[in-house]
Length: 486
Image (cartoon, rainbow, N blue to C red; front, top):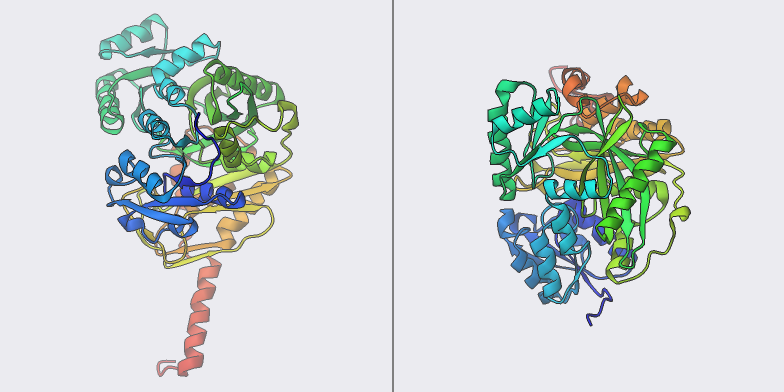
């Protein structure tokens, strides 16, 4: 029987997710191994870990997606467990199986469950079997005519959305607003699915116009105990990728909250889930109905706000579950009593969402009570063009939503300064100051609908920047004397 005691963890990731996992391991005095590609040799996660192993050149397929090299790195470093973080290989069935077959501890759900929920079509069938409401749709249409026939027979009106069956992270999803768009949209979704996931199978669903994206955090052990840690609102997205999340959701009342959380638990019990995972739903605010979207069989980027409102360390629980421990609490012990808000600080042009690469020449962050930061970079870090643009997660918490928003406004406006690369900070600040966000009246189309208005509120130079310019000028005058032209 395999020894389940975790003695050293290799983190099969980089930047923010790697740093997050290493932090909990440090708290528990568990040594860690970082892996890194050539451009990441001076990355923050490399310095934080107990030791580090070089696994390849810049392209992910040669490094962070190279399963054999990562397994070899674990053996070389003496790590007996692997945590995948999020992204890269975190939901890869083959990798999870390889880790176990190598005699290592996989810190996550079983490869069978990952496989079961990794296909949108199959996971939807399982949800239906578990009596979980799903969006009206058609699986695996062969051509555009099949889609048209389904819409006519089921009386489904435009818009609809075509999704790559193996898709995730917003890839392989194409909205269709009229009949002439169907052929091109179908071809595009299939092409993106094949390119990104090696599978061109698609499904088509009714597009919920004013949908809210709500997900339920689950933690489950290997003894059949499944507990929810309540919900998060993840509605604010750009290009189908989240940029602002909060807990609890301002969209639902206590009755819906109870129903959606119990539904998530029922589904995870049905599939025999263990470890941390998330059940995602689309909430139709017009009808107050929610529909199953997918199960994320990994640690979510936004897990930190759930930790803030519940006081639970989800990564630590993942380590316990991997060691075969029972959950140390029951459902009635989980009582959220805070409001938390998270923004994703990506190295991107805030007006276009285009990646911004280069060196962070200055990084200043003034922290104070009620603020949590998951930081994947430091002043002097290089932002390479090969990977996800996320550099930092900023979280605030308070007794109510107003306080959490107020604190986030203060960070983005006055207490954060990043120079050398562009970030989403101006966009994030515009969003949280918008009256519709403050009132809770928004949908997944919020950024798309308000883009011009949001960008118009950006300021090129704020008062702090001007003050710095004046200070530099005064210093120059003091050091060199008054120039001749004054």
